[in-house]
Image (cartoon, rainbow, N blue to C red; front, side, top):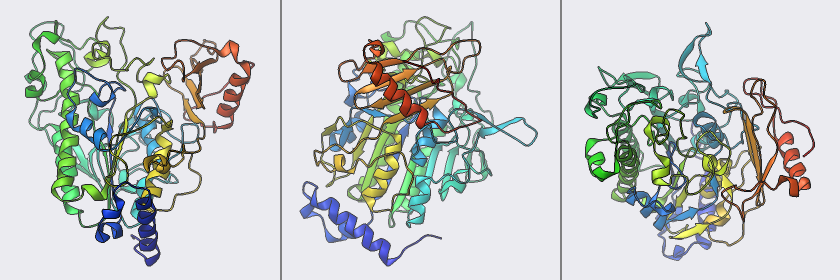
Length: 511
């Protein structure tokens, strides 16, 4: 049952008053606005690289709506995901606990009672406390529309079991490899959307590659967007928390034809035939740009509806990505996984690594926060931050009690322009996949170790980078600063809870 008590109303009003004291133009806010609890919309892209937005330096891909969001809000330049791949980063985001403390630390498929793989990923436990539960218990309507990946329908990780009143989209990440899947889920009901669904993976070694071969009747992202807009319309008269984990621009490439054709034909010297996984595409560079522009259009539709309904000033909007851009593949010397040419678009913005890596290119992601009248338009922050910070930040911003035991810190002082950096706990990543990797950022130091889980292979050496002078992680200075290496290694060992499903052993050896 939702709680709507006098105490809660007082807390929300007090929080709004505190925020208003530090916000430009807050004195002109209406009394009705001051009394209303702020809505929260969290927009999450999928595999969007650090350098793939215009507001982060992209020069080829059009992202006017997200760029406008940045112009109207605050853009963070040292923001990190909670993990370098899909499921664990969502676990970190929704629970406010870093990779060394959460249960799900990788993309493990769910299994039924017979041990066979079923639709969905390994579920987060019933004991997990999510940001959706905190908002729901504070009287908010809660909705999630998009890609879930934290547990099958009916499991402890079902979105309805983790604080969301409403869910529509892909429960399973594997199903989300196709933009024309057989079905989506509305809560616990499977909704058939395509009678002739398109698989997410295929090769076409010969013959003409066409877009139409990989289209069907219903484009899932459009259906998901419609559900999200409907949620906003239905709950516009009450406070709501809406989580939108979009599927774009995760491959396979299946964007609308008109967007593909809006990009220069001369970009594409050859077709992509599926040799690096996922689906073929006749114009892979234009296709990838079109996926990001399609994502931008969906963001624009959400922002436009908030304006239309008069909700923009009462809504805190956050935009980010789950991890870095898609990584290279051994299947081609130009195309990466799914046909993505990250070098052509400078997708990593000069950072090292890609999705699946704990180097900067795999973890550093865009972060934009807009809250009219509270967050100053055009702001830029270099405060280091990562996904665990979102839970305490959003709760504190709207006056909801922050649960105990979170690993993040509130960014509210930065958002309100107080010019004082929030006290910063170390940023921790304990990632068992892609060979087993760990990383910790403390101050401007970044400590990395790889190959911790490869059979018959010794663990890699500690690597240390000074991000203030070497954001591209080009020069390992571990040998020059052994005491710094030891400090970082001690942090990682202390912050790594035992986890039988996702084990990572951090060697207790000398630097």
